[in-house]
Image: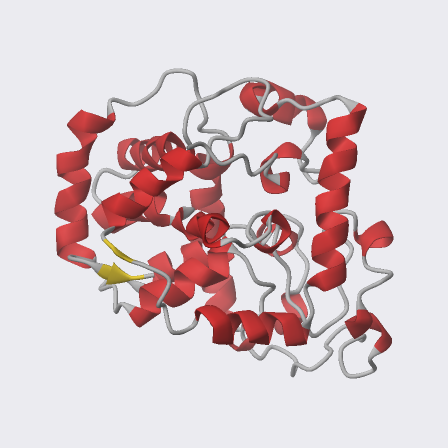
Length: 285
């Protein structure tokens, strides 16, 4: 059974990308109709209202035991076959193909970095949260830190946070909020979604990937940081050293969707080999 999750707002509307560039590079996510943009706005309104410090901490508690499901990485990839975006006007193939397309794009550009190829396959697997019953606004979309005032490059920043209770709380409503200057993003509480869930899942299951891989998975949707240039007041030197990896990954994530689908059957043995190397066996999700 196909599960319609609606348009992923992180793909549908990207105000920090020049519209003409996006139109050229992202032909397969070219949404221009008013009703769809209204729907995307509504998703972000929900997200920006309900993603609070308390909400995120509750989600860490709810999912932090990783008792949702036992499965291998490729079984999780296959689960994404059920996440066809039925509202997408351009493509109707499963999201699992995007995982292989991203991975193959990275493999072509960085043939010597097999861990980076695997990150391309892994990066969106946290979207299995939708199949665990989580609403779209708590799974997809651009991410941002909770516990401090949202910065200007957060999508719809000026019009979606008015009802977020944290912004009425003096502990969380300043530029630094509950954080110390340059505390490091590893000490920041990010809003809940597929990035944070997958990052925590990789740690829980002790993936033997390099630190760069964990970093890319956790922050690949943190557009206000890696593209908007915001939240530098929270960054450590380590964060700034890792930033180019996230930006490099983003090249292959945003605009790899194509009607030329990869031959997944021929690719699976290669990626199974990488899985066996870095994250083998049945895992806790």
